[in-house]
Image 1 (cartoon, rainbow, N blue to C red):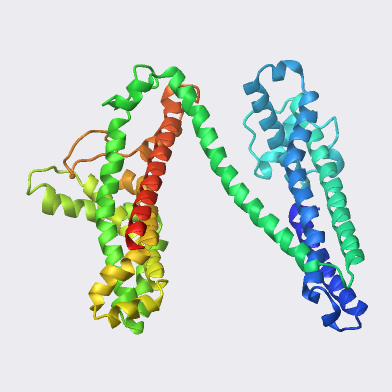
Image 2: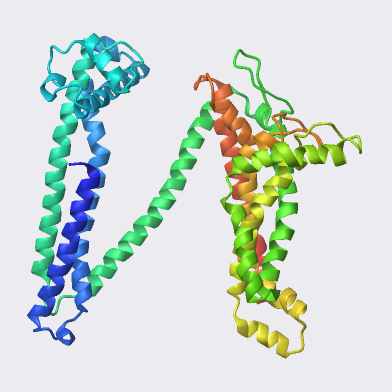
Length: 486
């Protein structure tokens, strides 16, 4: 049984548990819910919890452990000369997994019989042709050890899937039986359910935190490997970015940092005033009819893919800035520039600042507005001196989100700003950002042991530190203004 079907059966068992526990609770008090410690619904949800939580946790552990156990068993039966080093072993296991999937597909489509797929006399040449017919392409020749490993891999996967289904459903059934047994008039079902919900909330928070630590750890380890091969001073203080996989690379990050901050600054100059003023208008001045039309139209921008914005920058904004500003002012003749990418990224960020700021401003209590107006303040004075200070933390958060999005943007910069890494104040020159170079260093024929590839992780770590500093700065600003307001 597939994982999806297992989950469907678990949901059916959980629904059954809800009905059984709820009806048992009511039956034990002859239908008088006042004699129960907890409402009948809590008894039902306790049955759901007992059916789902242990079984889903068991399923998660099983899905994590199963591939490791299966591959370890298959790996143990492979010839020693094929698994002499780690890279060779990874390639062998990749071939085994691909061939096992091909065998499964061939059996499902009827190109191979179930017994034929497991036969030790299966001809590798014939098998390759069969797999090609069902759309499975193999990168290397099918050797006997690989075929035997794939057959064993497929067999183990099938056996483990069967036992997984049996164990998971047995755990769910035992949970239902235990929940039904615990269902008594004086059973604290509500407390048990609330504790489980609290535990799930804590688990979700823990996963989010651990994910952040995992990201930092993965970036940090590769960054350390990079600095073991390339001088850290040359990276942070070098003024030239010129990677060369054949040797002699200059990997100074300053031109990339400058391009990233320059384009982000232009984007924020465009997005913050327009987005914030639009939010103030919609929340404080616009009539309900106007708001009902304007707000959705602004939010439509948020649904446009960034590649479309990039094409807009390449085809429309870039030539327009070049013909109307750059060439007449003698500042350049290229449509790819800092201004092109910055303006388009700013337009993309307008709905983020506008929508978030609008919701935050609307959350300010109406009593604060009424009190200000009652003391004789005008509408604009109330907005400036009462509403905006009260909404400042949320507005700063919205601006910070837009800034992070601007710093991390890649496609618009690639199409609108070019790929030149340089230090220049001319906003009509082509420049690039760290994100564009991260993509460039990790695509194509790259050697993941070379500093020219590992530099992408150093750039990612630098981006992480920059955004972290932005968060700290935002917290300082919010706390300072909060103290003045209070």
